[in-house]
Length: 393
Figure 1 (cartoon, rainbow, N blue to C red):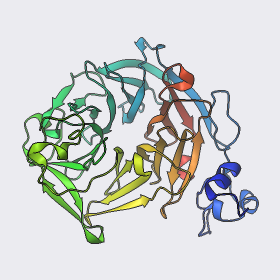
Figure 2: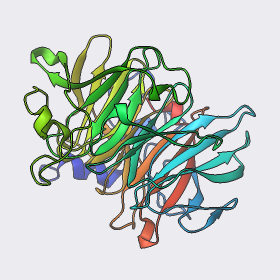
Figure 3: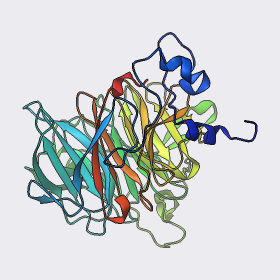
């Protein structure tokens, strides 16, 4: 055992680090056999099911969409990326999914209260490289373009209103957005080297689609000081143009913003708001960060030493479990315990040159949606996994 790394050991047994009732240690840190008898869940990833997904006992999968195939009349897009779920009045929900293609856009699948697919349609078009984004408390989807001249677009998940370009959220390599429901402050990541972690502070609370077009506010960048305390510095020009393709891809490296102090992150990617905190990933450093809004501190929740590699899209379960999908790695969605340990929740093997994207839960929290961006080299495959996710803490 001395010659086997903890990462390889975890891979070999396939256990996940959930906490058991009455125990202070995760499963991977104590005797697995003894714990199996004391819990209703199995903490080992089983062999891949008929859909090619390795799951824990008690979980099942189905494929809900594939690139090029019809979803109730909508031809599902290629390169599915960031996603989110929205409630509907009939007890169902809508899953929206970006397309990280040159011609981009956003598609949507509507489910009824029994999880039956009842509609498919497009909610955004004529945009480029729609990567991740963020859901808003006023029930819209902020889809983000990932290129140096990229913008954030506000979309109606119900498909009734046209998309809106929000220039106040800047022009840069956008990745993801997360919104504080109490203040309407919008936090954003930037997918490039020496990227900033930004926020837009509106002068008034946002309550409806389109309001962001007219509201004024401050656009700021994070600077982490000693003791993990955060200082927010104003950005002179969030629409600053890129002059040198090699030197100023990052917004804060562009001429008009160069004098502002900020913390540079290496490829800021997924972001998600939950319980007064914003979680975001830095893919190049294999880290998950936690920004505590009330205490105004930013610390690493997961420091990159474990089974989770290349974290990208982030979500949080109803029980508060932070989860991240891998951009390559071994194609896992991993959970992260409160003490910063990562464990695999599912794995999609045999999907080479792909990544897992768009993890998001239905309102009840028992159905997880995600995609393999280039499933088996045949384009996007979008999955639904059903199971007792709320028991994973």
